[in-house]
Length: 371
Ligand SMILES: O=C1C[C@@H](c2ccc(O)c(O)c2)Oc2cc(O)cc(O)c21
Ligand SMILES: O=C(O)CCC(=O)C(=O)O
Ligand SMILES: [Fe+2]
Image 1 (cartoon, rainbow, N blue to C red):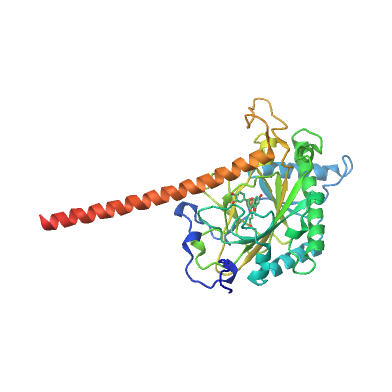
Image 2: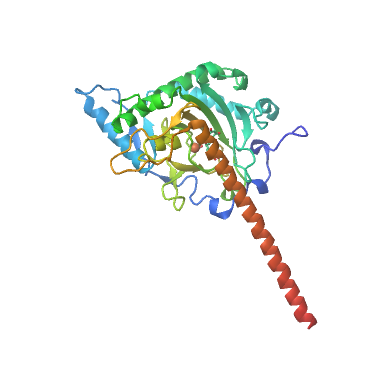
């Protein structure tokens, strides 16, 4: 590796995890990457476009399943979703090929200096105390007019055209799902997409290399997504975990060939006045296999106003006042950072206290010997 190249999890063969990847005990994985659960429903979308009346029962059955999953977990999987299998496998092939490029090629898109889009180790959040065991490449795909292709990978060949088709198809699928949720809230089909004003879409390709000590770290720490809805394509390795009891118990989502994992983010949660959950999730890694996932985040425009669209009888609004998505996002990110830094300080304090106790015990022992 050229001198000065930053540490990349893809190119190390170290057997001991570096300390900046080691999580506090309470954050470490509790369930194995391949101990799969079927608690998260897998929903076929075949028939979702049927008109009301003849065949309409199929649509209403699908809608019921989606709504129940959103109320229970805020996360579900979809199959028969209409996104071409060939397109998905082309996108995943290119994504895998990107991560095996030499470091200097990936680092042409380095975004650690605060660039909007590109390649980075661990996270979009700079200044986190502990790093995630992942490399990502991220690019902004909607609104189309705002695309900055200079921050999209230009290798492997074909990236741009495949990513463009993939992003268009996923935008369509996301809008379809938001239509279902709008209707479940008693609103017109377009209500949620309209609340996003001009919907943003951002792709994050996550690559989780094999890890020497996977029990000590996470591929992606526990979080909720900030936006409206996220569609995640994952390979068959496994590692996505969800919790609905604040992190006491975790389940590993069973990978399903060709499926998208759909989860609601904070914006979806607030617009439904808390009726639909913002899925609390994380990704764990392992020492046997590398893993790839592609997250498509559907977010409102930064200036879109965030406030519940439907407040049911007897409910209080989950937000005190309307705020813009940009403000909501900034607040979330600075809260996340603050929490991580407080934890780091508390850890340092604990270490200082522990040292002080050890020194005091040594003094006591010495005094006893000398007495
Ligand atoms: O990478 C992610 C994952 C996710 C996220 C949210 C909040 C966190 O504190 C965190 O560590 C991860 O949602 C994202 C949202 C983005 O806008 C960009 C991302 O890269 C991500
Ligand atoms: O890779 C995964 O399984 C989770 C990815 C994720 O949660 C994200 O990118 O926000
Ligand atoms: Fe996520």
